[in-house]
Length: 228
Length: 228
Image: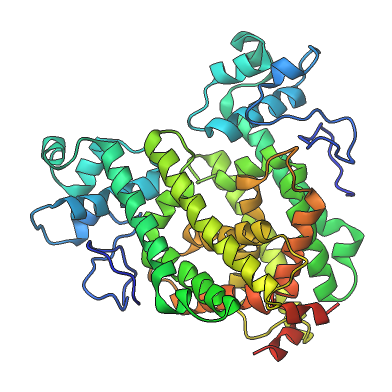
């Protein structure tokens, strides 16, 4: 859907993105993938699944090596260490988020429609790049890498906050709400998806994104249905 | 209000709850409190602040002892270990959540009004019992204690999901939305408060709770203002 990625994404089964190999935190990738030579992107895939399952602090390079089915020495052939794998994962997440802002529907049109598009896409991204977003959401600022990611994430939130203010100024968005609070709450809702969404489960990406969009813009009262 | 707690809560400055001693993750409690003999509840307060700052896995009993300004041996006089302190903190969080369901406005009236009250109270609780909720929100199920807390939390979510279904059946709540998804998204938004709210900052508890309630029920479109 317009997000360009140079690397394989972690996708739920049946994803429109095609050939990505589905990884979940509970199923070690080595078991379900045919053995192919590792490159840095596939190694990052595996590391992200491990980080998402155990937490970055709780995961060791031994865990990553085990999940990848290769030796630790082989991993160090590709990367300098765990921090670099985290950095690559966080960059993917942030690139995917920022790419949304450049999509035509996010860049042109009435502020509230641009906002609606962005909110929906961020909700979808939580599922499309689940391991990446999971790791980003849990970052606490414990290292330079993490602090840099938090800064970039804040930049994204600031861009969306500015758009909320535009929509408010245009009379399209409830002006009694503090824009920065609204944006934090909306993205808090988007971020929560990574905590409870399970690939291959009953819930589809579109259902979740649609529910989130509806709550944010129309609310949940049945009267809200009067607003198309 | 109306949540009864036998222990001191972690409160933001100026809280209507009165004499609670404000703790934040960045200010070690030993510095700002007069030395009083520790009891199990005050020790839990200190431990929760430490867990909220460093994460439970990253926090040691040495950290708790340092923050409390007492020896580790003195702590073991009160508790068997870190796990017990976590258990006490999680129980506080869950008791506070379940207590909401027993409040009159949550228990009686039209389903949608009960729901509105509960959502608002849960948002307020994220701030009123910030360290407790912070620790609960981050639980991953790594121990029996954590798994028990997750089970109880799911029971709470299930009760609220049943109420959403009642409101839908009564024609008061958008029936096109899947109740369990809505509840996860709403509580995802509530939970996110613990990640960005800072006690003593510009944002007041009421402003945040009001914004959250408005988003959930009326949505953010300026047309939503037509719904009182």
